[in-house]
Length: 158
Image (tube, one colour):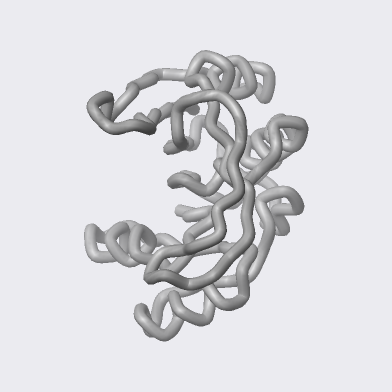
């Protein structure tokens, strides 16, 4: 299973602890270094979801856990096409993202580290349309943390 946009590798490691053969991919070499340091023995590689360099139909499942939020709207359809390309037929895809409209600049990362990245909020129905256009079947759509100022959404598709 590919954890695309794995950051420091916490979710990848949790999947491995559950017995899933998971590996992480992240755009940031610093995040990959941190993931490798904190989770020795697990596979992490530098890569971009906008240029996903995995062979066709080689991934049993794919997770993009609050990582698609850094991809501009006009690039999301291409990313989802790449996710479908690397997934084996019928393979599951789970997306987690911030619900809302618009974008904001994030200048501080986890642990107080300085950064400069855009964070895009999206409506679940819009993401579901992009998934269908990429050839996925959306099986579940759930909005979570409704009491927070920025709720999240989970979309599960095959």
